[in-house]
Image (cartoon, rainbow, N blue to C red):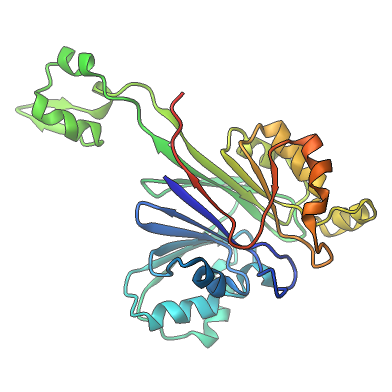
Length: 303
């Protein structure tokens, strides 16, 4: 199961009812944070979740509304006696930006590991989760992310018997372990069927529509995409500042056949994004307005 929570849905500046951009995902006792805008700590507390399990923070880019909450979060983690390492990943420039922000959070009781990437796409394998970073089209280097939870195939008793594998080893092989005994090697693929459908969440903000978003969002259970503007007279502004219109996000979700679309990263001028839902659902019926604290529990689906 993958828990997903939109912590902040605002763009540019925080509002009393809308913190800046941040998303948290929980799986297998650990948490992944994507972006860390101002108000992230408060949003986590309001949700009743914890900072302690966060072991990875992914950054889309380094504009203030996506990273300004990081120094305070690091200080809170340090004051909570954290000793486990924290990994940060993001586009080139991550180390320079983070070290600059850490002028106000210099002494921490845990190690910070930073991974910078470049190029059109890159995949990070965390074991239980695969993280795909893909370049989008903003006025600075910016990436979206797909979080994939793979699911192995079903255990095949007939195959296990056919390979002459002793029954006590079946469970270990099903868990992914390779077993060697007296020169004979048994591997998980000898007892498992084809991989089954996993869980996939795609997240992207601060971009014009791109082919990379539609391709990575294909088959996603949930696409979380910026809907910075809605009013027709904001099209030129969206193009000039390289942001997205809500209806453009809905079209991407339709073309990608996503399970749901959650809109996020609203302009401060968009006070009531829900007023546009009827129009947007004409494009993609499973469109929803993101709100701070909006949560979903995604589980595997048997097909």
